[in-house]
Length: 194
Image (cartoon, rainbow, N blue to C red):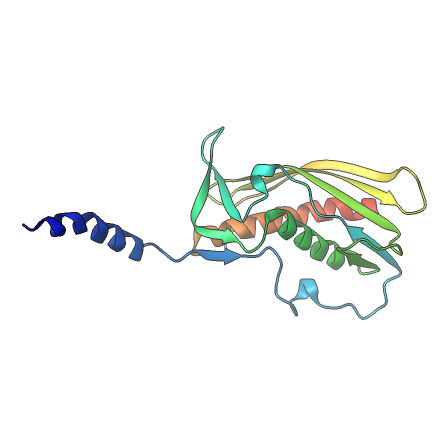
């Protein structure tokens, strides 16, 4: 056998392995424009609130979809990634959920001097498991523009199990689980904003 053939063998095996890997998919937590969650309201809002960028642990603020693997280890999904840093994606999704559940409020993502309230959210943990379970531990504080102290605060744990209706790709199930857990978080925040 010729020496160059021996040297090219591992390279060819590597190329074949790469060619057979599934394509990396990119996911967002917000629905497309025009969907029910982002449909513009017909009545004018009576108040404005600002959702500040969600704070979360540094290791989570990435575009990697991280899965729990045992009690102290996380692994990166080989087939999916977030379309933006997770802190931005969580902020946009929570703003959409809050806007849908509070039609009398205009929900903003940027600081505004005319906003009556600001919502500060701290996600202390966001755990995803390969079987589609998601758990979010979060706390929030509502700041009132007219008051020097917090108007309200709260905390909780928000879980979602695998959705029976969503078939196919494991990453899509994970994204759905995160979106459903965020919906529960938004439902808990909304009464404290009002």
